[in-house]
Image 1: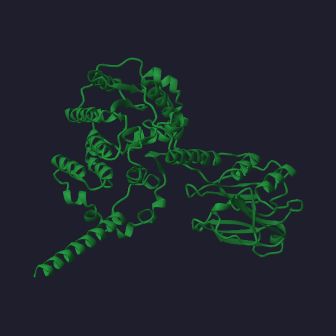
Image 2 (image 1 turned 180 degrees about the vertical axis):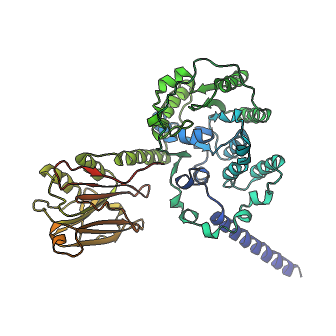
Image 3 (image 1 turned 90 degrees about the horizontal axis):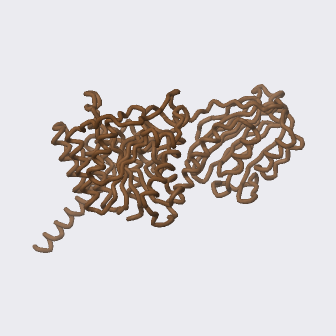
Length: 520
């Protein structure tokens, strides 16, 4: 009887474990995901990366709202100081959320410094904004692992919002169980979650021409809402209990009032904390922010402004005596990713043929080229040499009117090594140059398929199809299909097409046409 009871109990436990596993797998697929590349909120990517960090690997952690995830770039801080940091920021993060994210962080990390953006000390939400608070809380907490801290956060949340369903917030599958029709690649592939780096979200949007002067003097301190002040006191206590130096900041925002800053400064003085206000005129002058180039809007930095702001913060933290715990291979990789993202943006703005060809062929890109009609008419010998250096075995000594397709990139990214593949210095290339219509298709090692077609002058003059340039990457035809050399540039690191354009190389000055604009 006892053995039968033990067997039955074990069977029930095993079945329950299997059901829970299935529940969590389905939940990970069905729950709404906050992905910066798709909807400009980074919470899903932030949590995924945070939980993958090596234990106790961070020197500095940042908390706050979109001011932080658009304004402080941990890769730049690492490059400047060696400090390993992470943005645990979320959309419209208030101090209640900051407190519970702080507690979650302490389970696996022991930074020497926490930097807290205090914009949320004076939110003064409109009724419409207040009604959105639950949406922002969901984005902040849904991806947090189930724990006593998450339970505590949801229970406290329900005290203010009685319509919150605790079970749905702890197990989001019960809210999103009918989301089947909305599923996309991001629900199944971690590769889709690649637009956030150490919690930082890149934006290249620009602000309309504005003047940003900041303030020279502080007004009378504005009294914060007692709830926000109480949450800040809890954060200060939590930092003290864990021997963490808390630094309060206000990041650049054209709408912040000096009375808000004065209140934060007063609290900092009362608690012996450092307060860095980057809206104060003397600090703002050092930053020398050009809003139409370095801000995405009146509230936020873009990627270029974030570099400036993070470098200033790096100096301030160094002056504070914050010391790096040493270099780290993971952060070296994240710095490389940052450098590539910034280079990608630069590529999509280059308009000179020689500079463009040298840049895309001398970096780790997959470069696709297709010639249309009289594509080689306006190329000088120097222009041809630049192209031949990137495509091993290509001979353009007799190329006028020819059809041409070329694919060039680091050999490690290519899957098929057939007769068209030439190797040189770790770079591989497929090239076909002749007087007939050319079709070429293959697949990269990451599974990205590509198809190229070229109909040059000789082939087009004798064909009913006319002239054509086609470059399909992952099923999308991106070639501008103009008379000249059509380019498509794919970055295998970020797994994105970062540019497509055509140089009208049938004429001497080789003007560029580009319908591609990166505005995120």
